[in-house]
Length: 163
Image (cartoon, rainbow, N blue to C red; front, side, top):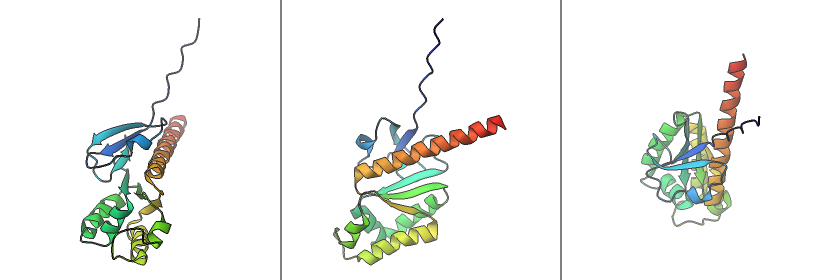
């Protein structure tokens, strides 16, 4: 009698917040599932089953500059306060630090103030800024993190079962 084939493992599912204007959906590979139109407690992206502990705030360079050096900063700091309560979090920027240092944005804000703000996010709120280069890089980082998070949690659950 032939053996039944093992069902394929369920793919981690990246959740996209309803407020995300230009979702990274087309950049995710087949290694994850994607569900758009989800109302997340904070951030633009999370992982199904981990919204209580994982969120990513995605920023274009223009968004980051506005969030650091305008009246938007207070609203962004409210977001950072919410993110800081999560175990897994990051600001994912679709640009590079080199772009900031080259002032490749439209603002009077100095590169030092923008980079300094990202360092302050880490120091004050414990939130890492991932310089992803572009939208594809941002999607790859979020996807990689989701895959690692789910893998680690499955390993922890398996260890508990065998203990």
